Image 1 (cartoon, one colour):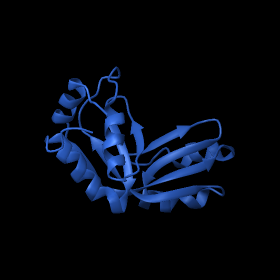
Image 2 (tube, rainbow, N blue to C red; image 1 turned 90 degrees about the horizontal axis):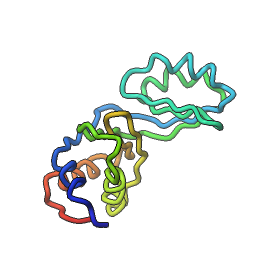
Image 3 (cartoon, one colour; image 1 turned 135 degrees about the vertical axis):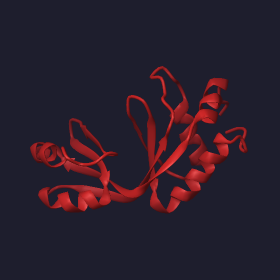
Length: 148
């Protein structure tokens, strides 16, 4: 994969931040949407809740989920994960930033769960792979790994 100069420049400006908390990815049946809206409304940052046709999907801190999960009969969860944020404001017209992240970590055998907000991109990686993921990304940011 050949990266454009603009993507390389964005990586060079990025700060890789690993959040210290454990997170889970949760799937709640759409039939429990009302409960999800009520119980998930007060979770702390960072969290993400997405309502699609089939499910309510959430990313929340593990300890918060432990306190909430009794309110759902159908929930499935995966984790623990660590959240990594690319602390750089990304214009919505940028093409290829997460593709580069995905390719770089795929080379290392690290699976990601990608999330984007209006300003920043984030990924979740399995807790046991987080240190290696951060080291790999930081190395790329610092220029010690030149190509994907």
